[in-house]
Length: 107
Image (cartoon, rainbow, N blue to C red; front, top):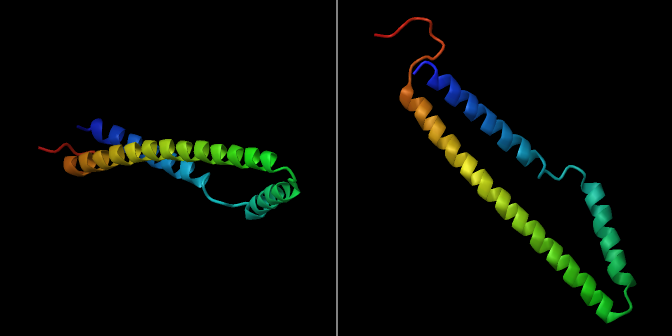
């Protein structure tokens, strides 16, 4: 039991750190860069004179958005699995109780 608690705690801390780091990438820090990209895309749309090319461009963007949405869904499922493991680890750590750093042996 002395070895189990530190291992569970270490795994738990590593998983929490992974969740934290993976979610930092989703924060929109460079909003001006994103706005410039949006303005560029709007400019491209406004420059189209041929309706067929405009339709192709729109379909390409829709397919790209679908790909991104699928990636986010996959990442969300991974995060849900990690959170579930973390909940189980925390329950196990709570259930085992006691002070894992204590030097005295319990009877």
